[in-house]
Length: 118
Length: 114
Picture 1 (tube, helix red, strand yellow):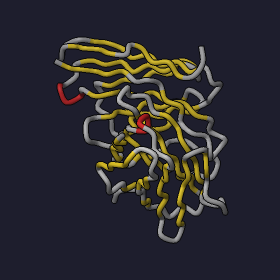
Picture 2 (picture 1 turned 120 degrees about the horizontal axis):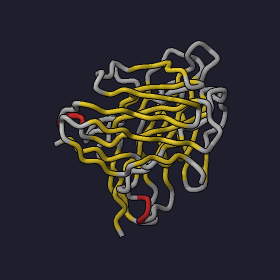
Picture 3 (picture 1 turned 90 degrees about the vertical axis):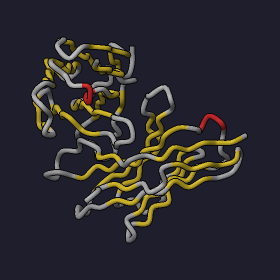
Picture 4 (picture 1 turned 45 degrees about the horizontal axis):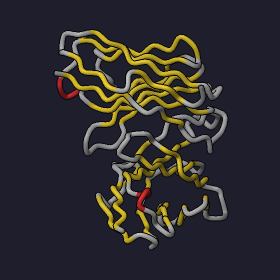
C-alpha cells in the first residue's frame, strides 16, 4: 500500500487566490513527521513546512499552512495569495520513527503540479 | 560553500561506460541519502548512510555502487547502466537525532543513458 498519496496530478489557481494541495498518509507509528517540498522546473527540492504527529497546532510558515487532520490521516498544504513563482511540483513526505532513536529517510508521494495563472 | 552540492549537473553516458556522481554537504549532518526521480514516479530511495555506515539499500541493482568515505561526502558509482536508469539523481542530508530535521537536497544530476 502507498504510504503517501497525493491524488491531484495537477492543480490550477488564479494569482492571489488560495489553493489546497491534498496529502493522505498511512502509518501505524504513533510518532511521525510530515513534510512538504516544492520542486521548480530547475529540479531543486525546497523544504516548505513540517508537521509533527504530536503537534497540537497546525504548522504555518509565511504563506504556507498545513491543514493537519490526524484522525483522517491527512496533511493538506494550503498556499495563500498564490504567486506566479509558486508554479512548481509539490511533494508531501513522511518520516516514520524506526527503532525509536533514529530519524532518517523520508517517503514521498507522487507529487502535484501546481500552475498559477496571472 | 553552504548546503548540499552535487556534481556533475548533467551526465550523458553509454551503457558500457563507468562514471561517478559526487555529493558534498556542508551542513554538519550525520546522514546522507541517494534518491532517484524518474518521470511520473515518486522519489525512490536508493541508499541511506548514517554516520558513513550504509543502513539501507532499497533493492538497488548492483550496477549502482555507493561510497561514503566520511559523513560529508557521498558518491554513486555507475557502470553498465541501462536506458531505464536515465533519471534525476538527488543527494540529500539530514540530522539523525531530530524528527523534524528536513532532508536538504542538492540540485541533482540529470543522467541520460544512451
